[in-house]
Length: 417
Image 1 (cartoon, rainbow, N blue to C red):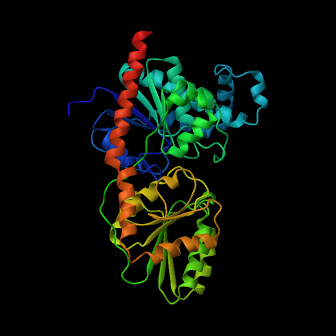
Image 2 (cartoon, helix red, strand yellow; image 1 turned 90 degrees about the vertical axis):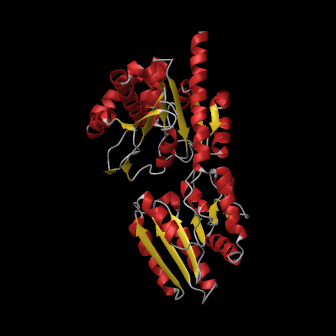
Image 3 (cartoon, rainbow, N blue to C red; image 1 turned 45 degrees about the horizontal axis):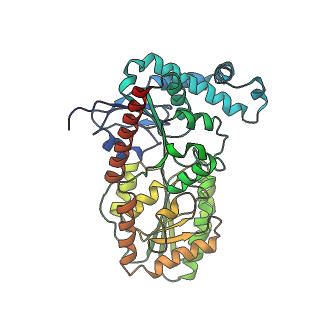
């Protein structure tokens, strides 16, 4: 393949810093074959990871944002001074969203200023791509407004998409959707939500699924039944439901040996570890919390350990990469019917639970997989579902083609004007 002509600039929250968007690695590996790639993180917290050969990283925006973060009053004043520039009336200061409006105003304008100083000369051959439909998406929409010939797009996942699931208000939604050339939702459910909420932008809203690489198949247990969960330990992940559900399952299947492992950490880690101590009352159950693992270590766990079922009890999701990865290894999944999860999980590939499920529902879901554990069909079907819906090399190739298509459409529109 000849040297790519287009420059794709990806704005991330953290990547290539860890922990963060480790799941971006597979996407970057594919996109670098089609574009001159530049990664622009907005936060530098964590351990810096290497990026694929030939991928540029630009940390200059990060420095500007960190200065604002350290001086909140300066950020507020800077944001307030730009509200009028953003077309807001004076009454906006009394809005319940004012704090987030100021944040967006300050960070979005910082991105615009950064672009004008650092990347303006390359804009004719550039696609600006925000990985999240939040601050960076707003920033590149301002760039698009200033430089209409630029191509600007964003992905949309969960907290950046579903306004009811976002911990903070999401201001300027219509403005962002109006200016961006395209928004790529990672699930049909996400697309349907945007279409229902903002129907006038239907022509810009597309599904482009994430994907995971093929690392082969996992194996089922020869002795006992092994349950795995992998997520941050936060309120939305509802780890307490897994604890209670696993306990009920183990109690109902004595003396069958049951093993539960949770990969991940978070603000509620100590609380959940303390709560899990009640599991020692089940003599046939052993459990462990691994703490935070790198993405490579998570994949190594899948490869090197038998897993019979993967469990996710989130109250809100986009379409979890962890579920995709589990299914790629042929592992059945028990998960809640939130976001786009139902697009992967069903009775054929595991068990789909109600979004407001109880510990008994979790127990029953695990039980349904246990009763089918000796039948290889459920593992085969999980793998097949992954191959058709979440295989990285297929999905990210299609995404690259959509980006090129969007770029070319933008150039055609520019010539006609």
